Length: 161
Length: 124
Image 1 (tube, rainbow over the protein chains, first blue to last red):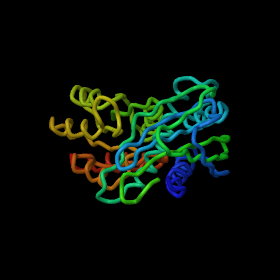
Image 2 (image 1 turned 90 degrees about the horizontal axis):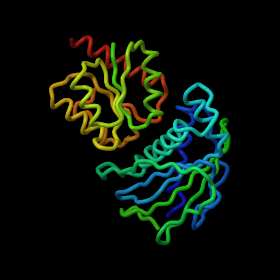
Image 3 (image 1 turned 180 degrees about the vertical axis):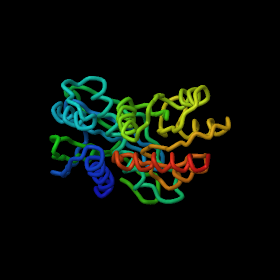
């Protein structure tokens, strides 16, 4: 997986924060790993299939998830209830949706997204079959820090790993 | 004025319902997938439908086609992460009146809602 393929996901994250969350997100760094280690308190996962196959994770500390949810609804969220978890799921859906459009050329069948899944808790490690690696992007924002993990392979002539 | 918001995400339904209230929509109902949307749109007259694309059981574009297949002319705006040109063309050909790509601002949604309602009133 080429590092530049992460850019649509970063752009999509900036777009989400500037539009629906009225907050500026800033990238703090990118790293590569074989597994997802030390995720945040709440993590949304979504799958990509088609000419790109992969997985996108969006992970928040509790405080960031609550601040994001409060901003979205314009009312204070105080606990990780179903609405907050649903908000986190929708955020990863929007980020992956925005990115996949940029990774699809005209005339190419659009990449399909799975329905998102949300995981609570931090005590796990997520791997990926095969040799693909995870690209991790750290962000800061007016709502707190968060991280994005992306791994995918391409089937098209654009080339992947 | 009465609208139907169709999205499998409760969050997105809540956000869109809030925006519709600011446009003066008096009553807003909700559905969580395409099947529910077709059932609702067939049973009750709506002035506007906001429709997500990716939903379980029946997708938004399938619901759109089913609603138009029943001869229901309610204005429908797709509100979706599907941003590819081919998807937008597919939705418009299937009978969508307008298209909003997520993420959106409240202002964008309100502008498109008002434009579609104005067109519908002019055509009536």
